[in-house]
Image (tube, helix red, strand yellow):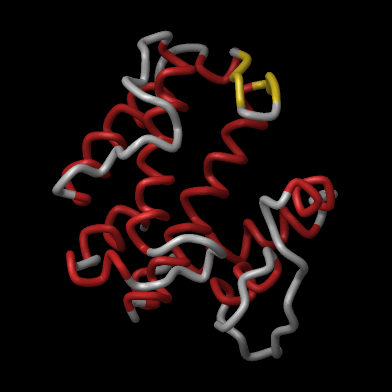
Amino acid sequence: MTGGIVRSVSPAQLTDPSPCAGWDVRGELNHLVGGMRVFAAELTGVPAGGDHHDDWLGDDHRAAFAIAYALDQAAWHQPNALDRTVQLSFGPMPAPAAALIHLTELLVHGADLAVVIGRPDLVDDDACDRLLTTMRGMDIEPFRRMGAFGPAQPTSVDTPPHRRLLAYLGRVGL
């Protein structure tokens, strides 16, 4: 899902504001690419080549995403990848829990980008709905206090699943 959305982002849209507070589209894409590179490094032991918040996009956001995605997929598909401990910014975490965080990053930021570029048709609403159900069953308040998510925003019954997910995580102005 997110790869198709990233391929649809035009260079002119990189400076558009993101629903993710404090970022424009380029900043959010950079976060995604950096995250994939860092997760791949954690799982493989091969240095990421930079820190999470470095400039990972260069001049071609699509190519940067494709390369990071390939590294990320290869890392997660290694034998015993889910038996490992992954070092995240807030401490070590079992790989299955880190995988859920990583999936959340990819789905949520992908949905953010789809909203910004006006391509909600590229969002996997079934996956967003399942993630929203999972997150509602968890205690995400510590993540809200850390600033990872904002306060939940109201939605109506006819709000599409990707927008309900974004609103639950504190995105405003949707």
